[in-house]
Length: 83
Image (cartoon, rainbow, N blue to C red; front, top):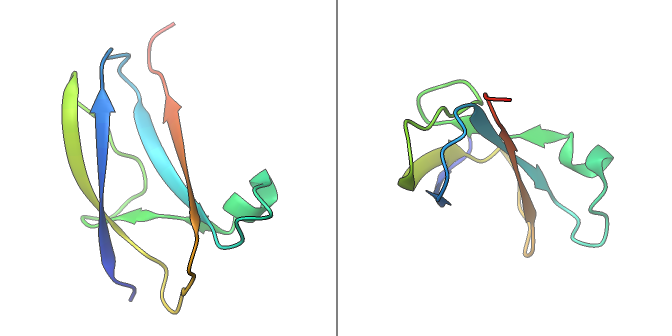
């Protein structure tokens, strides 16, 4: 298993829903295809984090095993739950 990293997110307006983080190992190739290789897993399992309102969230994610990079790129995708 990979090591854990802590990611801090600030939500200023709550829109229900969830977020996910993806990792691209090559900073010169920030295509969706690159990010599709590594969907980060939450420390407690699963990939979707459901915030409960506004404020700061410190969430632990597991890096994929054997992943090493000097300049990886994180992608944050927030899917709103309201219309």
